[in-house]
Length: 199
Length: 363
Image (cartoon, rainbow over all chains, first blue to last red; front, top):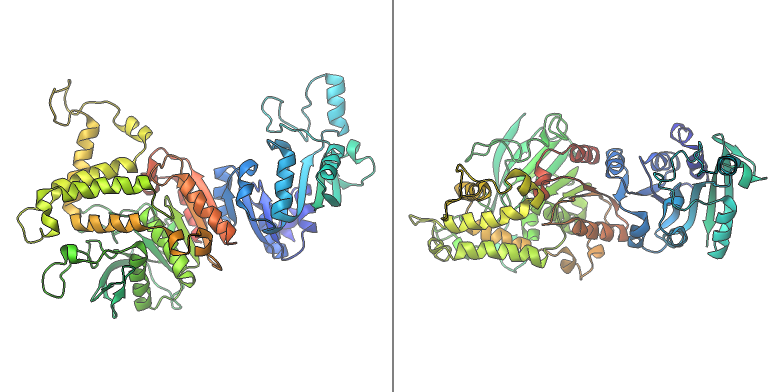
């Protein structure tokens, strides 16, 4: 399972819970690490959507099927329920309208995996409270004026959004220090969260 | 690099979209690299409007290197050490395959008696060649511009014949603007008295002036404004001041005239008429009930579509239209818009990311 163990913890959690043989759309697939892993280890049929042409070129060179495009607009090109899973890893907080993107995820995919950095992690809270400035932390390493994260979100915010959208939470996984942690106090303790949704 | 030059005589008449058929048709082609024992390593490269089969070997008339030598060769992105490359002159052209300059059954050149052909007819000719060569499935079909149209047409109409389909700077239909520019070119040729309704093959003069103007107009569409400005700006040609006349004062004029006259040395005006017509008729969706997605229904080939951000002849939106259709039909498709300054012509020029995409996709 070499490809799976090389993945970032949130991606590894997603890869672990994707059912073998599924059709998967990885939105913001980057260099295609997750796609390659689930294609080779779980026999999935994976497609990617990625904004950066250099990353797309890398993916194509790896033999992956990746379309260059903007998740904010181009998910509209995919038919309803074209995939068993739509995956959005660490991209929700960069979306122009995260709520609409969530709708699109659950339209093109029967289920969705969403991972994001938790803005309510204690380090972030402390940095804001003590420093009085927008936090720059391990999980959020970029200054406020350069970051692509235009819609910071907490675990509780995400639960609220899922509920408002009528999405069912099928599973949730939390991470701190690149390790999985339990759900108790996750909104304080987790640097990253992964949710599996259906509707 | 081993390469061969051959002409294949089609054993059967070639049926055409017009309802006519082309008898005694021949297809001239080049091959590079060795075909393996199970004939599974063949890559068909489809050429553009004024291209030819000399993709990676010197052009017999101009002596210039092959038109895609930077892409095709030993250890190049399309590696002739590993793959058997086939590049054939399309039907209707003038480099050895049947076209308007070919001799008809009555011993005279066809000229305008040559049947009007389509992109699909060209591909029929290519498929007949593959049949003749005993190649059931191509490892890949690759084409830029009109070559991309052929690749798409092959994928749509003969879906089992190619495992990989690479389409660069192309489109699934000719737009009104595309047709308009071609019409300017055709009218330039047909307005040349030397064209003589196409019957110029035995005459002392040929419609070189008209063909040169057609090429000049088309050549502008292959470049970007940015590229033209960078290359020529408003700089004057071999003079310090404007001449207040109609010589080529500007470098860009001189360049276009050179491109135009050079083109007449190697290309037949009637072929230009026929091939531009074929491109204008191209609308892959129309061939498949009006829905492009249906053209690719059930395909198991992998697709890669590439566009360039400064290509205004076949802009990225046209490639996205193809990608959208492929997505809708569930095909495995990759797409990338590459950044390049040189407009449509970018697909022929050095581009590191293009090389990486082509190499990665083909392997």
